[in-house]
Image (cartoon, rainbow, N blue to C red; front, side):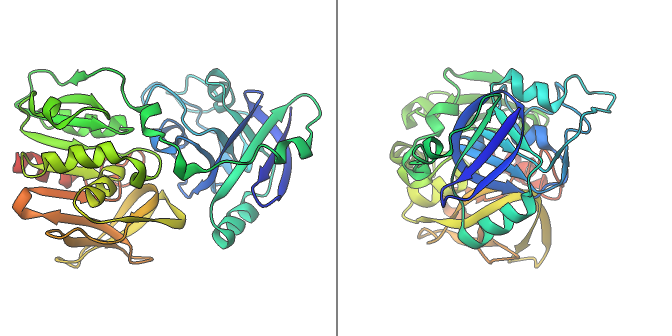
Length: 352
């Protein structure tokens, strides 16, 4: 199967197709993890994006039932250097090729991904279109379809749970987890600490959250631009100080907006499992898993900066002790990645 990746600036890459036949548009981003491609593909935070992995060989250990972070694949397309035709692992149930095909997602391989990453680092993330087809591909027709504004689309509403769900029923602490695109790893970490987790749709109001009489509130990760989610800002603001609150990734950014701060778009984002974060108070550094294209700019009044990115000094953590709120930009549940910051879930449980 032939495949073409066309970038918003007109740059074209010809390769081989795998996964599903089709044509998909999204914002092209890259992830620097050396493993964990299944977790990345099933991470709802990649909604509306075409995902490129910098590691050169993908698919060698296949896919399985336990490494999924959600029920589906969320990137619009998948870009890799080399596709392994073998899936050698005792837990493997499906090849990467068939996994993408099952979920209707096209992929491209056999292209210079290192060049593309350098191009994005220089020019910044941009719209792209991936086409995988057995037929001839019309490049002029493709270019006309690249009118795609990632920041104008509410991807959260596309990935959130449609109805409330309960995990760890009977747990000692009740957590209201607002689902902006939650990874299963966050739920697992809470349940393993004896929490009864009530997963709520992103449209849930403050009154609906309070009706659960939770011991704490968690704001999940998710896709898209946090500045356009005005309803989420209002709900979070109304819940401030009600119960201990913990925000992760998009949840962290939404906290910034809810209490008077702001966010800005990074040139090419932080995505991978090897990002260093510095804790300001202790001077300790952590290696973290990250997946975000926006960052908090202005820290809200009443909040203090707690952690920064060791590479670009962007905001990685903040807290408001008066309202019992804290948040981090990275993923303490990892999935995949290092477990350096799992203790944050213990801190949240202790606050409750």
